[in-house]
Length: 315
Image 1 (spheres, one colour):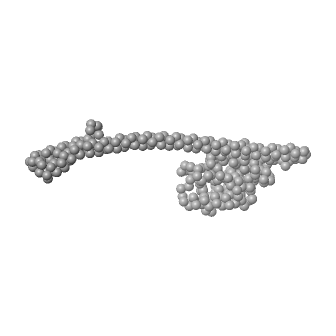
Image 2: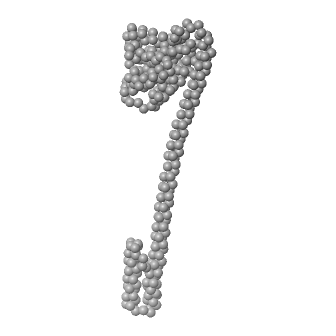
Image 3: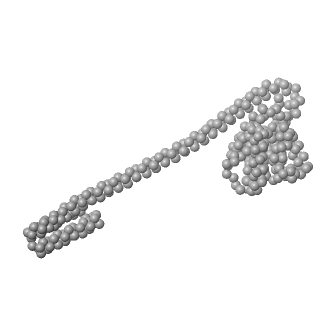
């Protein structure tokens, strides 16, 4: 095996994924491989389409990036990206597909406005999802990381021709380099495992932070509930005391009313008995009864004033 440089064809819509393509391109270059894309060519032009096909044929891997746009449609009724994908699949080139999370917020320019394109995009996503394993991505950094890891795995899963220095192909000591290359392969595989471990650690730390934030929010909610409960208890205590005071006053009013009115009523009853026995002059009896009625009336008026004026305490 020789040290190879793999040519990786990048396929996607262009305007909405310019930044994503640039990020992936830098990542592939950092891996010392060759990124290539034909986004500046039109697949409808026969000569240029022949160039695109030849470029795909000469590529070792095909990376498909799907955002939220289907893109411009060719005369065949499919997008340029889908046309490239169909050809790469027909040519049996290893395809790595990365679909942006459908819940990620986007600007209006990053989505198709036409309903038929939205349906075309859904159909395209369904097709590529059925054809091979896919990865979902959120932002450019997430995409670059997942593309790098997936490519490293693909390099050792699929034996592709790649590009090799002529000196390495013709060198008489090529066979002697095999153990070294195998050692490097093992090192790379270990690096992939370490990268995956680091990714897990990072994601685990993010999860821990989210849990801590949720716990803090729950604690704050509990504190608010405690304060609310305490305030409610204060209100209940205050109203209970107020009711107790009012009940006490009503009891006192009742006692007062009974004491103040009972006397005049008893006098009336006595006068009525005396009048029946003929023991009192009728005129004098009427005068005294009027006096008792006036006294009862005054007591009732006084009670009414007291009930409407809670400040009064004299009974």
